[in-house]
Image (tube, rainbow, N blue to C red):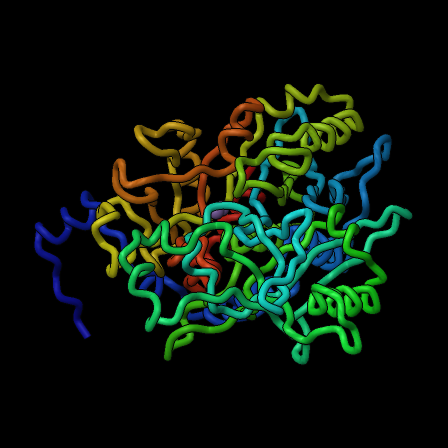
Length: 469
Ligand code: MN
Ligand code: MN
């Protein structure tokens, strides 16, 4: 068939105007199977890791399967070596050593594996009206009304004075009990319904319902609490005081699942930011010997400001990097100043149901691929890293050369709000850093939604970044 000749207007439009297209109109048919296989692996990764500690465990399991070995100080390193180091069970750095010297810089993919949740307080257990509860203190930015009347699981560790640690993952197995937080019935909720959304569920009412059956044959007080403690003692060998040295979190009891008649989306807890964490990890696993050393950093505590010994601000990352540099007698600073970091974190996907908080021309859209953010921040870019024009141009070139479907993304319209990532803490190390990641619907909700195409393109983007020379 003869192709219709394009008009001069059509030709000029094609040549001059930026016209993003839906990723499905740009996806080569040959990549469809890859896309689906990748997303199945990602769903398994989500189900295996509901806390940063579990994500680290799963990351080590996968890394060792792919030939990675623990990196200890003083070890010799050779091109092609696959190394990892865990920071206190909560964050992990992995490296594939490149053929070039570390003095020429490294390519870093940095994501975070902590997600918003409800942490137990140090003294959580109490009984009221013959019901037993655990008190929580929420972690990260949550909308409290979203966390009531859904099934929750309990994950974490209890550290005992004898130095041992008990792992808890209750609710993860199919037959295991779960927990919940109650809310008012509409019949009695008239006054509550008049309150603003942010005030209707106070933080101190997020109490986890954990039981109701009293200890038998006892006339004392708190019989339900006693019965629960008795069960916990039998199962975990703990007494009530041991909660003081525990890190237990209530997390949504949802497994990752396909959403939509067309199965084009994934609904799950913890996409932010395990969706980018897995992309950074899976892409690292595909590397042979890259030209530049590839680093995958999966950090903790991003949701509360990247603080603490396991957050991105911690010198733990610098220690790992300087141990690598020492092996090649390269000053750490010389490595950093030539390095590139893609701060892989989710961005907000345009939601037509809440269109007024977005600016349509600069919002990430579902199925338009990896969302590149020049800057994040709030109120006049405050707290943003703001990548340079040159760095954005470099990233465009790298992604285009690898056939990655990507888009520009800004988190909401000006002064509507904002957010941050680990980017600024990488940039403070004198590392050129840009944000990019998967657009998410209902970010920070117990059940978030992403597009499979965007997940896959972020993985392809990470691979392109690691392989860039
Ligand atoms: Mn995030
Ligand atoms: Mn977040």
